[in-house]
Structures are given as structure tokens and as C-alpha cells.
Image (tube, rainbow over all chains, first blue to last red; front, side, top):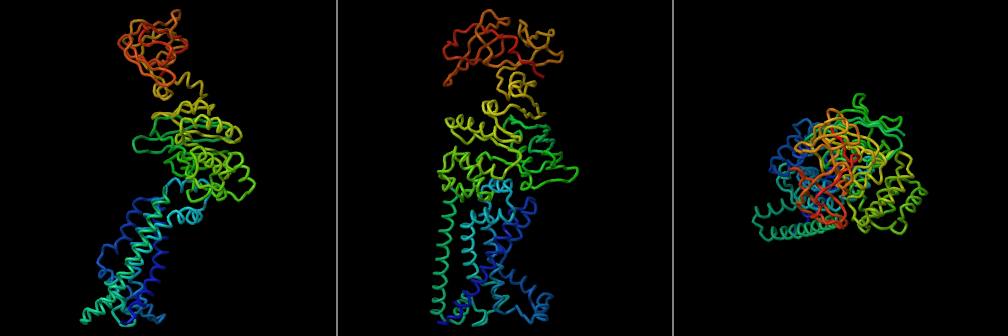
Length: 223
Length: 333
């Protein structure tokens, strides 16, 4: 069994979860603290969109941004000699794009579970916005955030649609586990596909087990 | 330090309109549930923003819609005690205080003052209701506020604890130099803790000395909020007597009756058994209900209902006649 898809998948999922976790948490907190309800609804819909769109649609958008014929893609190529399309970076971008909404939704839900009076109390006690985030919001939402993070990690690991479109399916370079399964089946190598399937099922099961554990802790903490 | 408040804010079903000024006192705010009492406190603390008006504490303008001033809650130095106390659940008692101030001496002083030394390392969920309230008070004072706002401070406590803690809080408030505002719908609580009282009704705010306002609530709505059970529409006869609509005999009133007087209020406790008094009311017993230490009874008096409260020693069903002192009749707008 070729191990490179497992390694590539892991590297992709690891880097993308770091990016997703921090951006998802920060953006969710920013939207959560907005006072304007209209803006809240707008941002919520916008950031959840990738969850409901087919990944290929997202792949199309990403190609439209990073394609070498497009302004941003051309700029990156001309000035930094970076070609995003069909590179390992592309697998990360695709994974971040599709796993972000899961992180975002989980983080919003985790923040909304906190008793609103706690924020008001912190304000009247002179806490700066930064202190409110680090001292109150983050510790009280932590279990919910971790549960969301694990979920987003598993989603990034299983990303297929947007990855194929933006990163392609280059063996040893952008071929992640889901793509390797697809290729193995396409080539008629049933037992190889089976091995990859086993690996991914075990990992995802483990992830969901962790999610469950974190959300249980989160619930207990509220009592 | 003077507190000046004059704000308007549109609530879901009616506008909140409040204007008052107080200096170095504890002001109780009495109002029906949903009239916007808590909203008023949140506006003063800066958590909610009024639609218009001005709030000033001493020399500092906290809010002025016309001048575009709206200090964030962090800069107002206004302490707010929440109904459910809003203690930080993931921090110990000590840390609930130490995250507010770095002044170690002040923290120790407050822990001592509120008898919290032995629970300083406990988490809020391990505390009793009374201890939670003490921690919330201590934490509020740790920020050294210039004004205290207490939102239904005893509503989350058992009856047994309430009276004890009211006494305790009374002592702590006496040490506080600034103004205190207490919002409540408990008459007992406000009467005990607040020398001045503001009755917040949908149409206006009536402010005065607490015991005076209980004796003379001025309007029908205020009378109801202060617990007056009997309110009748009347026609004034002369400067010291009125006739209740539908009654045959007039009532003598001690205070001067204005010509436009439309209502009177009679407290259920003020109906007494005394054959010699001026106003005598013949009544027929309808029903009664017992409470632990007294009884309520309802009587028919010339086609209107009278609500009486009194000692359990008296057999309500045998009462045929009440007397009512002229001083006990409250003239209302």
C-alpha cells in the first residue's frame, strides 16, 4: 500500500485545522458580539454557505480566484512565482474552505450557550473586549470549540470535490486519501481501496468519539 | 454625588420614560413586572442604550443623546448586581474578585467583610444562594463603583434567607458613600432598604419619601403597586368628604379632597372593628382565605367588594360592620 495519500491527507488536515480553528473561532466571536441583528443574519448565512453548496461549486469559485488566468492567481504567479492550482497548498485551501463552516457554526453555538449576563457583568466590571474574550468567552466555550474543531478536522480529511477541482489528483503530491480511494476503484484495485477505506473510517470514528466526549464535558460544565 | 437620569426608550409594548435626580440616598424603584425596571438599570450601566435623553453621575456625563456621548459600561464605574448574580462559573470566589482588581488588600478586605474567607477557593456552583449574593456584592465593590444598581437582589433566595440578608445588605449599603438604586417588586424589601421610593407606572414616575408614598400614593396605579386592595371611584362632596359611586352614605376624609378627585384607596389593613369611629360600613361576609400569620376576607358593602386583612383571632364570618378612620382614606388621581 502506497502510504503517501495517508501522509498528504494528514499534513493537509493538520495545517487546515489550525487555520480553520483560529479563523473560525475569531470570526464567529466577532459575529457573536455584533449588536446589529441584520448583520448577524447576513454573516451567518454567508459563512454557512460552503456547508450547503456542492463542493464542486466551491471548487469552481476557488479556481475562479486562484486560476493562473485570474487576477489573484496571476499576481501570485508573477510576483511570488507561486502557482496555487494543482499544488499541495491547493489541497489545504480546499480543506479550509469546506471545513470552515463547521467550525464557525460550532463556535457560534458554543458562544451563544454562555449566559449573556456574564458578558454584561464583565463589561460593568471594567473588562476590556480582549479580556472578555480570553477570560470569559474562551474558557467557557472551550469544550464546544474543541468539539467543533474535531468535526472540522474530520471534514477536512474527507474533502474530495473542491480538492479535485483546485488541486487535481497528482500521485504523491495532491492525492489525498479520498482521491486515492477514487483512483484505486477507478483502476480496479479493490483491495487497495479497501485498505484506504479502513484507514479513513477508523480515523473519522475516533474523531467523532472525541467530539462526543468534548460536547459532553461542555454540557456538564453548564450545570 | 448627584445622579441625574432623564431617558426615553421604546420597549416592545410601551415606551419607558423616566426622569429623576437623587443625591446620596438609596432609591427603591417599584414597578409592575415588564414595565422596564431592569431596562432602566441596564441603560444606566451602559449595557443598553436609551433612544434619547441624558444620564449624568456627578460631573461625568455617562450618556447624552444630543451631544452624542455614550460611555461604554467599562468606563462608567457603575456597579450592577444581577438578578441571578452572574458569577463567572469557571473561576473560584477569589478569582472572581481578583479578575476585577489587582489590589490584594482590597480583595482581602472584601472577602472578610462579606464572610467569604472560608469559601475563597470554592467555585460558584458549590455556594449557597446567600453566599452567591455576597460574592456578587463583593465583586461589584471590587471595581470601586461610584453608583450601585441592584436588580431584584433577593428574588433568587429562599424566604428564610431573605430577611437575614436584607438586614446584612442594609448594613453594607450604609457604608457605601454613593447612590444606590434598588429595583424590586417586593414591597417589604423596598420599605426596609430604601428611604426614598420611585413608583414607575406606564404613564409616569412618582418619587418621594418611602413611608409618605405608602401613606399617600397619589395615583390609582401607584396605589395598586404599593399593595392597596380597595380602590373605588368617588364623587367629592366637599373639602373633607366623598361619596363612593353606588354607596348611600358619604365618607369623611382627613386630607383635603381636591375638586377633581376621582378615586379613593383603602388599604385592607385599615378596616378595623371599632364602633365609635366616624366612618361605619355595614358589610356582609362573602369568603375568606388563610395565610400563615393573618387572614384575608372579602365582604360585600353596598354592592361593592371590600378586601380585608387582619388577625386570625377574629372570626371573619361574624363581622357585620367595619370602621374606617378618615386618616386611612387615600385620595387618588
